[in-house]
Length: 259
Image (cartoon, rainbow, N blue to C red; front, side):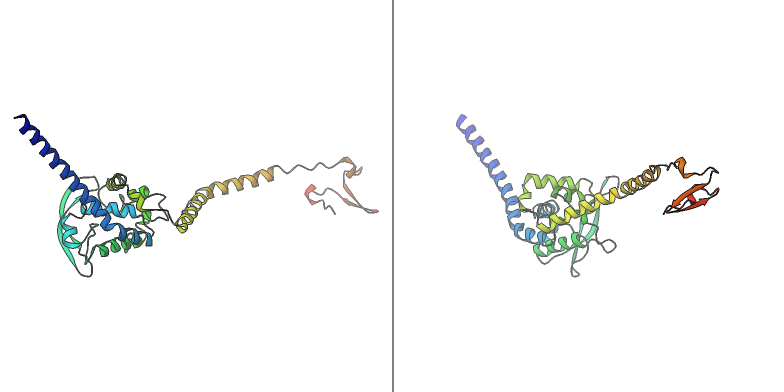
């Protein structure tokens, strides 16, 4: 009886380990499958590969969603691609965070790479009305992948926790290693953007300081004291100019000309 119990526990444990290993393999295989095109396309468009990979994981459930299997759509992008689309049920959120289900047309792609390229194009070119709609995800604007992911919460999805979900995935699977080092051009752009922001924020303050300094200079001009010897015995101002004496009777002080 004891042997049978031990055997049962061993088999159960083996199955549990196998299931976990299989689950991990699916996740690892998915990341390895998309790693090369995601890194290449993301960096070419000044986007964070870690964020794009996290998006693909969340949107396609590691490539197991019906949309990714039937339409190679790994980012849940709606619309039509070269006239091709599929209609599927999707979960959305209201502005108050209430979840509801609806049907929508999603783009159908000929390949995984086409899906990645189209997502990169969307993030770089935004919408028809606002080409900078996703600028918060650009490496030239977002200081870190975490910031880029959070920027998507306000733009890409109706789910207010979208950015947090992406960052959780990035941390869990150590996706930041895909980002490598930021290019020199991106670093320069970040410095410029930070400097311009600081200048814009300080412009009003600088103007007030300059105005205050100007007022201080005006108020600090010392009053001129005219010595008694300048006046003659009749109270007129006498200014020596060589051997001649020029007299100004009852002229205002500011009209005295000094040569």
